[in-house]
Amino acid sequence: MRKNLVASVLALTLAAWSVGGAQAQSITQALTAAYNYAPDLASAHLAAKSSAENVALARAGKLPVIGASVGSTYDWSIAGGDFTDSTLSTAGLSYNQTIFDNFKTEAQIEAARAGAEAAEYQIRNTEQNVLLAVVQAYMDVLSNRQLVALRQENVNFYQAQLQSAKDRLDVGEGTRIDVAQAEARLAQGDATYRASQASLEISQATFARYVGAPPQNLDASHNYSRLIPNSLQGALSEAETGHPAIMLAKAAIRAAQAGSDAASAAFGPTATVSGQIGTALSGTNALQGISGKLGFSITVPIYAGGAIGAGVRQANLDQIKSEVDAMSAYDQIREAVIAAWAGIQSADAQISAATAAVSAGREVLEGTIQERDLGTSTTLDVLNSQAELTTARESLINAQTNKVIATFSLLSSMGRLTASNLGLPVEVKTAVQYNNAVEDVWQELRTVAE
Image 1 (cartoon, rainbow, N blue to C red):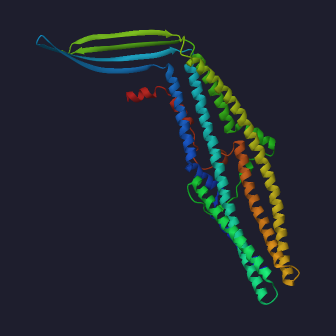
Image 2 (image 1 turned 60 degrees about the vertical axis):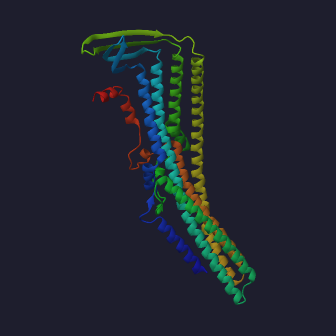
Image 3 (image 1 turned 90 degrees about the vertical axis):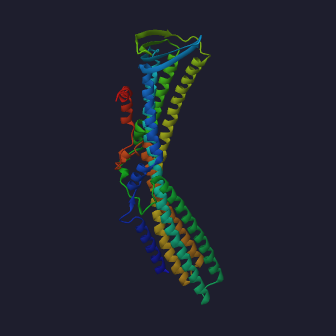
């Protein structure tokens, strides 16, 4: 039986080696593939570009609107048996511009810029969520593969014990109770093995959803623990000053404040200038000269059915809400940092305890098997010792998995689980360059001219 135990342990070791072999798919490779593939990240990137266009739309509020028009009319009439007709063709240019709107446009531009900045931070926040989900899926596959191998070994052990019990019964050294107990444990072990296979299939499907490809041989080793500060206070300080969710909340406050200013500006006057210049050509090709006009107007709202007041109240409420949301984000980040830090400490303790339990469990199992062979222990004692050893080994697998996930969770809660911080070999998704491009408000005019 000792030989069977050693063979089983060796088989599990070889299985674990094949999972993390020399050509293993590392966490870095999985994160890189997911970063380039993730639809959620691509969507956030496009949303940030779309948000940047609000800056151009806002800046258009006080820039001129220039248009050209060409038209022609044909008139005819019949009177007293006489037919007359005429053609008039016109061409002209128009110019309209708001030169003052009580600083409403300036507030709208500031709100749009803050919104574009918030959208950029949303990319980073989505990036962190995606990468953390990838790590969780990665470790689920790896731990489930280890559990499948472990539970397969468990089934093999119970099969050996059942055969041993039958052999002992045949020679008169055992009982039918031993056989029944071994059969029951084998059935239970087989059910647990099949459940672990189902969990593995689900985790592999989740991995493929994030990474865009099925998992290969996985290797959980990494060097990202170097990014973690030496103290909880250091982790909290980094999170409070650099987490994208907090920066996003601050940008949202700026946008809401600017929105409130824009709403209040609606009570003030608006000054506009307009002009037109054009010419007409009659049906006889006679040029009728060039004409033009220039206008200036100032409008002051007096009553708008309550719309202006409602807009101001709504904007003020949105500003208060943005500040409350920022407080909530701040508290959530602090909670996440503390939870992740505690998770690492807890996982370390669990690994130490599980490692000791596995070592002791193997000694107990070997000793119980020897005692059973000598007649001082029963088959049930052996089965119970195997169950305790299996539980300890499962605890060790789960603790090691939790340690990796807690490490990356801490990086995420600190705002450092990004492609740049991890040094992933990817082109970082950002809308900053696009934001700078849309600030060129005359690009549209040049495009038309070209």
